[in-house]
Length: 250
Image (cartoon, rainbow, N blue to C red; front, side):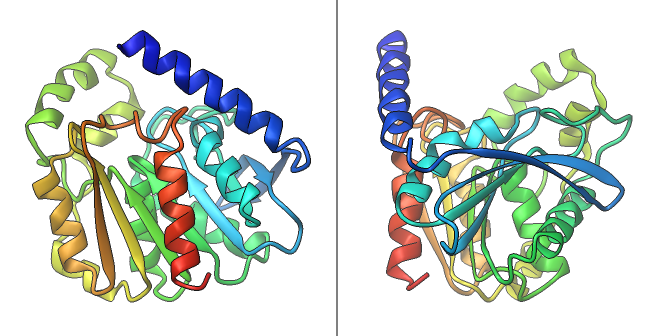
């Protein structure tokens, strides 16, 4: 079944790539917050801006499916490689707050105004921290598979064995951070989509701490989905986000 799922995902990604040929991907670099970041752009010029951030150890390619779905829907979608990841030079130390600030400065440097901002896993954490540090930056938000603390469910406890085995500055960050008080999320006032897989590393109960403490948040649980299966090579998250943005008039 897993092999079949991967094959179906590959076929869908191929189909989506063909259907988006008129929306060519552009790769550029920008200097922000002392970092030179690669970023991908796809979608019509003049389309409302959306920024999507990937998870730990990934790159803009991790967000390719939602990026193409949103681009096909008329949005201009920006997907940066986070500091020290993807095509960017690795670092000796990582903190979520730094990545959130990178995204804030990315938005300002590219003059994106007040975009919709979303992220998966680490990218979801960075999305929360961005809006908490700079309230009013985001027109709308999407937070997928994020956690407020390393104590976020039995699945993550099992995942810690892999983190310890990797023993890199990037994975070590996940053992120490983030440390967000749920009450601090009340500063987020924009419409927010919060998602999690039914079989995620992050528990549904922990995810509800996020949605319950953001005043205008909507929780979606993708049943039988893992931490990444509804995002990578799968249209479920992209379609959900497209519908969410449209329904809220963005």
